[in-house]
Amino acid sequence: MASLKDMRVRIASTKATQKITKAMQMVAASKLRRAQSAAEAARPYAEKMDAVISNIATAAAGSPGAPVLLAGTGKDQVHLLLVCTGERGLSGAFNSSIVRLARERALALMNQGKQVKFFCVGRKGYDQLRRLFEKQIVEHVDLRAVRQLGFVNAEEIARKVIARFEAGEFDVCTLFYSRYKSVIAQLPTAQQIIPLVVEAPGAKAGAATSYEYEPEEDEILTRLLPRNLAVQVFRALLENNASFYGAQMTAMDNATRNAGEMIRKQTLIYNRTRQAMITKELIEIISGAEAV
Amino acid sequence: MATFHFDLVSPEKLAFSGEVDQVDIPGVEGDFGVLAGHAPVVAAVRPGILTVTNGGTHERIIVLGGLAEVSEKGLTVLADVATSLEELDRAKFAETISEMEAKLAEKEGSELDHAIERLDHYKNIQHQLSTTAMH
Image (cartoon, rainbow over all chains, first blue to last red; front, side, top):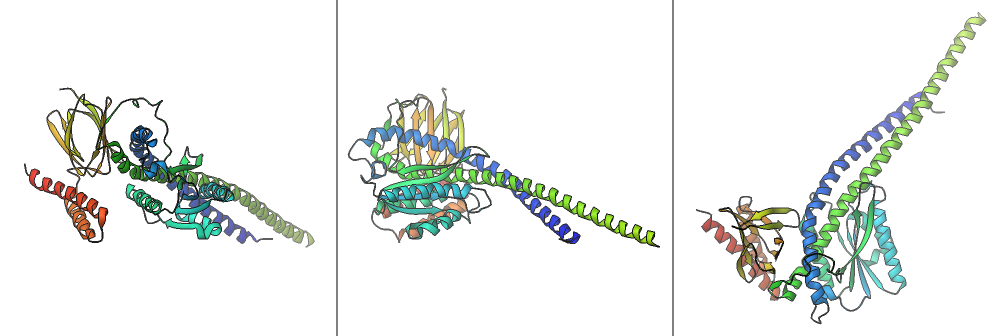
């Protein structure tokens, strides 16, 4: 049986762990607030972009001269999965749930005889996918050095995707990220970005306005589509960031609670053992005195 | 004078929002001014200086490309980058220009044309800054 000293050491180390998880939880909470406001600040731009694109695109989609980013290549043989995950762990199931969704999609596509390629953003997803699909990962972007996510980061990724698309390396591109719903709920999401899925404007107010275009509609569209891709990636990165801190906060909250529970149990055993020892010593003294 | 609602949004933030008298936009096919009751239009924006007039005061904002949309609800400019004149770091801007010049040599074909066009816009902004900012 462990000596009293061993038990004291173990309780102290559990307490130290609890302090760390508690601190991480609080850091995650404050970072979450910032990530959330960043995601909200990006929303008006993305919404406006959506509205304008759906306005122009519904008109252009049917025409034969529609840009390939909108109309697609006409095939769906090669799929590119753009998987965005976090750079760090200790965030519960955040990274693995995104990877799982991507993996299931990839296996389903491969069963249908399609070819699947991966583009990984973030170290964690890359590490996990590498075990299964080492040869299919065509690109890997690491954002670990980035302190503040900027639009330039998203633009960079979008440019790489478009370059590969123009080189004819894939036909369909799907974006995987985790949508932030609340601190306890993050939803892994798959969103097709090439060819672009346009929601019919119809129900939205103001869609009926007939605009004048300057320059011509298709020229605006060719400018806008690559930009929209960057916006979608940027939005995914921001949502991911908020989700990551939400997941980390919850995970660390659990860890702190578990550590507390463990400390309580260990302290109980420690006190009981200590008491037993004192009683034993007392009995020894008393029986020794009686014998005299 | 009638006013209208003007939103200037960049991917990272809402840079301006409010009622204004007039906005002058550097369009790809030439500058144009927007007043209240302007016909609905969607126009591409080139890198340049956007002027917001409100009650006699002028505020100038540098936009580096984007899109302008006028509807009955007002004007929305989706700018790639929006920086107000006071916030602009001129030394850094000049640095960007010389960087772009240095990169020109690597490019060719239509990419080169785009790069030159963009560089021209940037230089134009710099020129305007150094001449009109005096008074």
